[in-house]
Length: 329
Image (cartoon, rainbow, N blue to C red; front, side, top):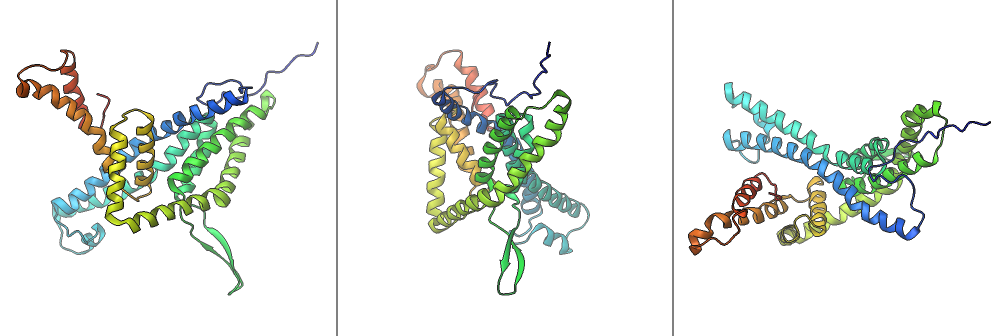
């Protein structure tokens, strides 16, 4: 009697679906229903990296320009080379330079972290490296190879990075690709390690390389260039309208789809160094601060309590957490 060998298939992505849905309409709705969860999974893991990098960068600026009073038009390295600082002030300036350098490196890891965890959410841990590579290539794209007929030689040029847009696209595509390959490529048990540690990583890395070089980097770079052109042409009025729109969309739908869409746009512009995330950060904390403050001043202003007894301690908690950028208090 023939003995059936167990199929060597690795556990799939975080969606938990063991088998593909046979109904095309259900599959399509499932895709669009799960996609926001995958994207938010990446954003939630990118935010700590942004916070760490942003806070450490802020320390460097505070030390250099507020404490040591360096003129705003002079960089920290120029201040170090000026010879005007010594002793403790020189040590502080060195620490400011280290914080600036380290914070910038951390900030640069935000997009690769986002792409890696989106891919991981879709295709499991096997998709993590492909997502990370794609995210890294979205911020540090491979140079373009061009033939210059005037000198009859090949030369390289630097493309416009696709940044957040490119990372989003490649992480989703790579995640589903790895998930599909893991399901379709069936090997005997003794080749399982070869499949998971060599075959799937190599195939996914080659795909990411080709997709980023030929499709996603040109497309994402074109979009980024257009956005920068529009915002630059609009000047301060354009930045003001952007800030008002992001803040309003954030505050009216905390935790909902509108809020998530606003966060996606805000983080995209922030990681691309186009516009700061200040408007969204303020909109996140104003509602809980306002509600918490209302539970403190209601009796003083109206002479009576306006809320249920259980809401008063919750109001204080909400206001405390709001100062740390948390609106769910």
